[in-house]
Length: 119
Image 1 (cartoon, rainbow, N blue to C red):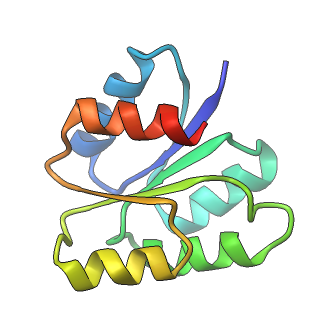
Image 2: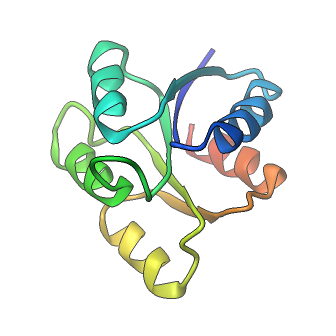
């Protein structure tokens, strides 16, 4: 069963995203900050990461860029899931190496479809 790391500082958003993905039969690991996410990725390499942009400490853009720059994590698909929904935000997110960009509030069907496509 694939493992998805959900990184979001909002408990509500984590619950929505996690519940949606658990319902699709995925194992969910949760992180509330960029630093916690990096620790969890090192400890248990997930099959996919759903990453918010606005996080305490470091932004999701920074985390994504770092992950895509490391050989050991560069192949892990990253979906940026953010309230930042302008075309420039999406462009910037994909330029940092994200494999997909979904705006909040999330469309659960779109999220599941995107996760399944990338796994």
